[in-house]
Length: 514
Image 1: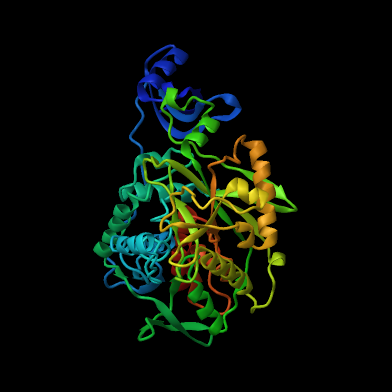
Image 2: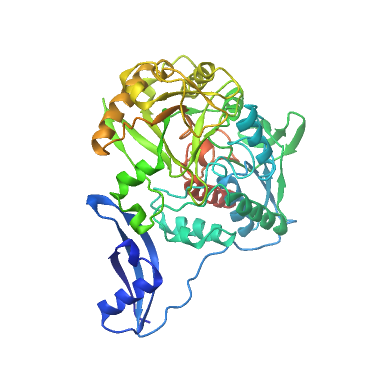
């Protein structure tokens, strides 16, 4: 079969099977062909809106059906056991790969199952009450499940990325995630996918235990021997994939108490900004949104301010700002969108780089960036007044450093308190953001919109701590059998990269056992 890849550009009203078929027929001069879309990107630059497609084309014959990878099903009930702490993407994809390799995963998750988590989220949004074990960050599926399942990744490992997307499609994700340049599943659809992954693991003989928090480890002569769960249960474990996520500060402190080396690492800190989605659509689509019935628009902005990056993060078209703290005394924000992205607001993290030289070094090595992050989150909680009420301010007032309106319209529940966010953030962070926002207004006219509202704080774009590991064995240099993994280890930055790292750690476990 003679196949070729064709780069194709078309207006939005032609980006559908019938329109593409007609236009390709005109281009090729015949109708004896078949094609499929491999990649699809909506490009609204330079005053034009068009789709850029990568097509796989076969002339004079039919394309075979697309082949997708599926996780290999094995009975591992009596296989050697490997503990996996954390049921987020790193932990669950590690468990799937362990099954393929012939090992029995024992998945230990501090929080509840993905469906039960919803009750705890309602408690946060309605009453400002946080369950420290089950919330937007902790529980089955990890932090990405209820912050909307963005699958965009900068990973250059295309085969690994495709495997993750194929496996997600196998478990019920829409097929378009394999085509879209910025794939997204949606918070409303992810719980079903997560439940199906768990059902597959259990069917193969894995164990998945909820309400099971890691509270201790025992190391003898450099070898992991036992772990403690919920302070009371002791399990003999010699291989542990530690995939606890970027918000498990108690795990960092547990390792520090056990005299294991940790490393402070750069992270990012800032605020969430919320605009009317209609304004973002108008700016990005140049007034063409209604004519073409385009999806809600997104944006990506970056600037350099005094040697540090200021940039948008986790932009959520048609989205909602969510309360994502894991502690009643802290306030943390994040954003999410449903699959239809049909809410009236667009929100995005607006953050600046925090380098090690920016942070006062008063805590032990490996924890001073965590202490800095926590202090800012605590100050935000105090400014909000409690019960997860978040400090907020109009964007224009923040730039002008003046007190603003008491009446701020925002999607954030359980509510906001109008304050001067310049007094909540560290001075150097607030200054960088002010200058960055003014630059963004030059790049995206009207960014300093009179209805734009800032909500604080956005502080968990990534972990402020790295758990070191040997680059070849992926084990902690002091403990054989301990495999730091995913975002919590400092080795991933999203669902796809965390899942890839989970698979890598599973393979490293198998290499050690062999």
